[in-house]
Length: 490
Image 1 (cartoon, rainbow, N blue to C red):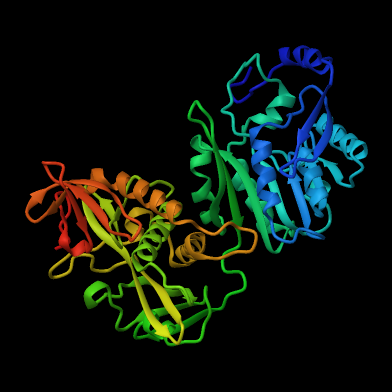
Image 2 (image 1 turned 90 degrees about the vertical axis):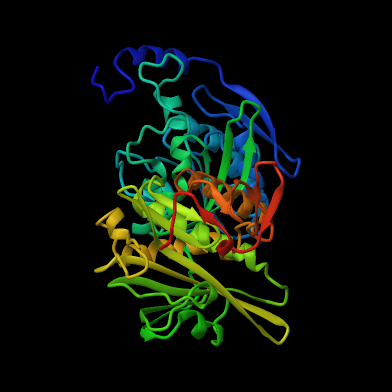
């Protein structure tokens, strides 16, 4: 059997045996405690914890009545039928004909109306996209993605089970679906995609894949099993779809200009050349040969924002955008609180940074996030310091590609999107702690008051805590108060 085959001629006889098994009746309870009666044939995926997780997501979707929903890989049809109960106009699809038959039968038995098509996105094109998605755009797309790692010559799964449980697509099904969304009209304007992934190797790269493909992404829900496996639902959408995007050839400062403007949250301003850009403590920001300089309105409401937390979110946005373009986090380093460094030829040099500034306007507090990042530099070695640029990391990273990625990444951490759960402080702190902890091996140990210490954690106000040799906790408010054993900015 060729090395790239997961199933061979011997599997045909085994598959016939699987298909001769008896279909099983099952009653599934929805999040509203309503019963859905199912008849599940062999090789069709039955409702489990992941089904419940997706059902809870669509249960929380606001005003579903009359909205169009597409479920890919519908299996038994449980989630699609629940969506129909909620008022969605439902189209479902599955590449397993037994799943199609099961879903159609369940719709009849439960007196619900859904359209079920055979097919779906995958490595092989089988007709037009409309064959499985229908001829209209959908407000919500769901997919419980296959998430088991494939094993060649496995006796446990046959071709039908493979379709539901294994991602054998070398390109990755997340990437393939988003390509369909970008080249067709299956997702409506303002629409949201919910993908259920496992935190295995492919699941861990799903965020970067979304950002690279032009989509914002945020965790919507998660379920952790006793053995440590974690299932996560990712909400995915087009970033800042209805917010203004402005460009000026030359400006003093995008932050200053946007602060004084009337643009609402999500409004964006970019300049080709920033004459008087600045960083923390008023430091001058030099505009290199090719550089990104842009700002977003990230808060304009009556409640006071937490500036330290906004700063962490901005740092994460820049960090993740660069990783999505680089394809790996190996040479990308997040330095608390607002810088991203690159490790080039064993040397750490700053490639970009963020600055959050705010003003009061009547009862509102208005905050903007500014991001500067070097794409290419003629002179990385300055008189008193060195910098890096993204083309040193990967020559294919252009300004245009970075512009798309940073929009997606900023939206992921800041945008308030209908149907997408708002970002919780706990998620920001967890994301930052994970990224910053990964960067410790490059930065080395923190040096505070001439003492070498250990990083202990990040606080809800954006400050960090360090432990000295006696395990005494030190609360650090300003990044300028810390040096790092492996990094010198000068």
